[in-house]
Image (cartoon, rainbow, N blue to C red; front, side, top):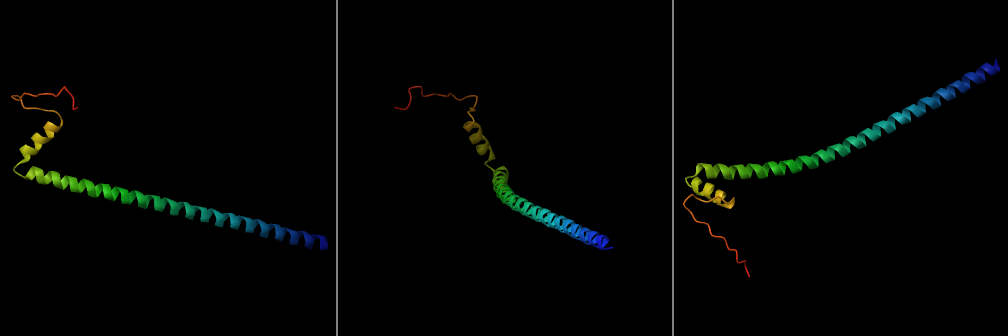
Length: 102
């Protein structure tokens, strides 16, 4: 009878130890998940701030282009942009400085 009592007592210790180990593993797993999620949230907030500033810049640029399209001198703007890309009018003569700038 004493042997059976000792065996049951040892089983309780083993079950308690196993339960404690599982509980600790669960808490460490939850803690790691929380830390990982917090890092992801911080990274995503930084990305959001960067994208918000890009959006703001694009909106300002679009507003400026809308103002040009709505104005009367949009032909002058189009001509300026074409000249920046190397286009010329059909009746123009283009001179190139081949001497260099010494």
